[in-house]
Image (cartoon, rainbow, N blue to C red; front, side, top):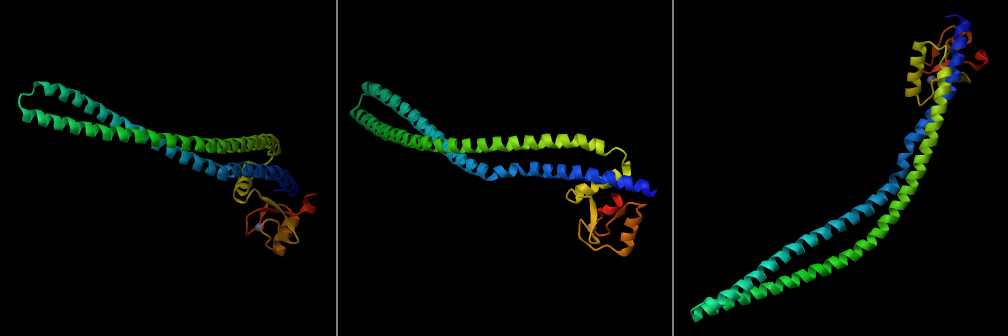
Length: 242
Ligand SMILES: [Zn+2]
């Protein structure tokens, strides 16, 4: 390739690199944004989990109470029936047995009533705890959502910036051949956004490895694209391009 063309190509790549360095930083910042919410989200989730545990416990209590209420109802019906049976009994023995049965059922009924009352007490206490927890969950959620709004807004600003640079980038790519552009883009991707590096004090501006006299000579002549043998970045001498 002619010297003039290589210089021209390198100048275009350096201009493109300026844009890509910005875009790379914006994209990195975008990726970092969600992690900013991790701590706050974890606090909110923890409170929410605690609240959901109480909720589950409340449902459990209600189910258990309803089961006892059903038992109570059938016990009451059995007592009514046993009382009716009482009238039809002929012998004293049968009568005494039935009375005993009724007493037993009444005692069952009383135990069930106590258990049901205890469930009501437990549920009432639990409801108080839940009301307190709800206040804490809501407060934590409010903090989380406010922070999430900020992060979402920051991401939007960054995305807008990327979009602006992308359109500039399209213009900057004009006149760069496909193969060189693809190679350059792979470097941007794999070398933390930095593909084009100037020589600084005879060293690569990317990996800081000292370049040989032969390499520096090639860069002076500038009739081919020269890459650092250590980091593979594209090298250039600022004074040659200016
Ligand atoms: Zn290097």
